[in-house]
Image (tube, rainbow, N blue to C red; front, top):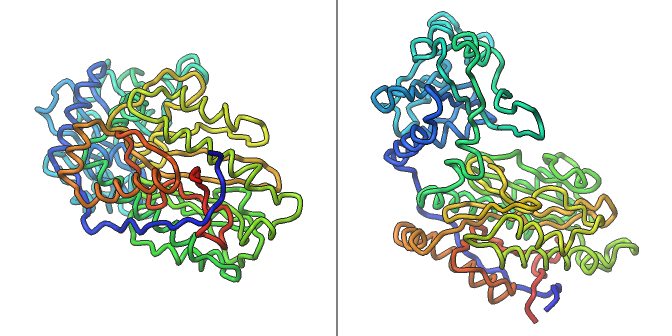
Length: 464
């Protein structure tokens, strides 16, 4: 049946009462896997700062808050030598947050500290690197937050995006054998592409709160509120953000990623909001009206022209995604339906998510990469019409889990599993989207799309 707008009751799927945690042994296993994967190098370096902490957090549970940090793994000696973690003045105390802090050799490097802070107790960076085993002829792999390919350079392995002063020291000491090895962690077949059950449960925890926050806005926002007041509806609880909080109305909404302001939300405004927490992001967009009759005359076919075909495309994406599906298949599902220039869907229609909001994407035109159990993904299809029709948007997280992983999840996290099963049933029975058994929805507004935000109980469905 074609997508249509109808009265719909969104169930209360509940909020977590139990917070999952990653046990120390998992971090040790991750390091062991990296030692195995990185055998082409003598040493492996992971750089992190406040904006790019996910690789380091994944490996150690430590995320720098104000400063830079550097993890050095000596692959020649393997687990016989402790990994060296360089931190700044404030990180030196905060490193206690790492569940494997006793497995690390913590070194104070004060130049990672903020400007004006003491610099009198550190050795030079060169001396620290040499002490860690970096020297002439050593092959050093570097992981920052991005890697490159032949579209960007004839020698993409030499493009290293971490601070130049670190790379200069590394190349001086080794004679130049320093290359970008970030794909070992962030490639679509990298270590972070496949998640353990505890990590998936942690993502579900974050995604539940992120989606509930957006849900609170959808059902509470009113004309006359400032954008700041609308954000207060989210009832944020302090889970670290994976992206700046987004909420805007009126002309600023067309930019998409704007932070809230003191602007007063008005009837008729286009409106968009998104919240990304470590492991989950939810976004929605629509108009601040009760019905199509409240829209300008030229766009009163908003649902028929934009929202319904968009919803049908996303529903087909949901029903097709699964273990073994290629990224190219998902790309075609979207572009065969809303590939017209009017919709202007420019970015990948879906991507891997992690502690960072966008890890990488196997979903692109012609992709033969097959999705695997343990992947966490985000449906992320954004029409940028650039017209008075504005946009419509469903962004939510899911995971893929084979039968073994599903049994493990259900046993270890029954409360979260009940939420997941409730969401699957709602999508099937009320929305008309039947998911494969391996697809686990993590959002408390799963595929729920109310185009008119003053009528949030009217949403899109495929049911009669």
